[in-house]
Amino acid sequence: MAKKKVIGTCALCDKENIELELSHIIPKFVIRYLKKISIGKIRTVGEPNSVSQDSEKHYLLCGECEDRFNRSETLFAEKVFRPFQFGKFSTIEYDEWMNYFLTSVSWRSLIFDIEFFEEEGKIHPENLKLLKASASTMKDYLMGRRADIGSIQNHLFFFEDLASIPEEYKGLQIHMSVLGSQGSYTIHNHVAGTHATFTNMMGILLFTIYSFGDEESWENTRISVGKGTIGVGDQYITSTLGMEIQFLAESFESAKAQLSDKTKYNIEKTVKKNKDKIPGSRMLKLKLKDINLE
Image 1 (cartoon, rainbow, N blue to C red):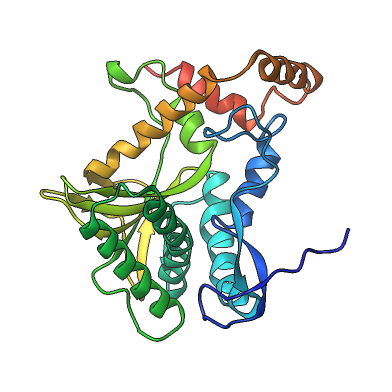
Image 2 (image 1 turned 60 degrees about the horizontal axis):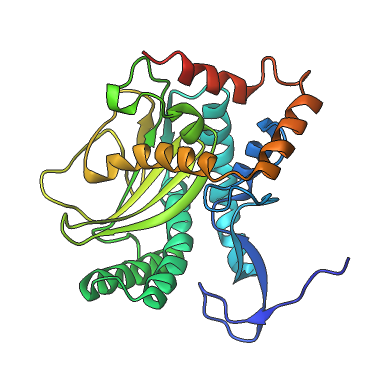
């Protein structure tokens, strides 16, 4: 099948009448690994009765700008994502590529969320103004027109296995919903004063924060623009954004409740067909971790 050719304006460099690439919002290596460890087809919490062959992608960037992101994506996949998924990640000393990669991910998500917020018409004008200014700052940084991202901060939180869970969260599949999923969206909380883009890369949680609410505390999570160190453990968050982990788990349960009889039948058929692959599978291990939570 011939590749679809789309001509338009690159969202990053603003070149007009140029062929656009089909760009992933969350890098392809994430969904590729999720598909690898899944038993059967991938489904999203937004449309649990539909099969998803890939993660969200749009005709967004020209080939040259896609290449701008490739180096930092490759480094993150090799030095952070894959070691974390295999339980071999503890601490890493990083350079400029880390902040560049994280900014590129959140920027891609943010510009589409801004478009949605404008169409929906429910966002406070001050919040919309802040998000647009943040997107512009990030764009200039990604294009090399500025050396930093101003007051915007990137924070990484590595989700570790839980030994126990508060009583009100019992029954939620925390491990499965966080470590077995991916997604990205922007939060605008006018009352709390917190605005951020949140991205889950199978337990590697990225918070790109555009403004902080009162009495927030982030320990050992911030990514420097230049050199720095980040690792698993001794990370603490006091923020309304910490509730996004609970939201992921609740959305996972809500999606299960929306499954049609036909979808349930197809899932059961797939499980029976792949029963030899289930023992020792990553997804079974995640499910058992949730079952064993105290």
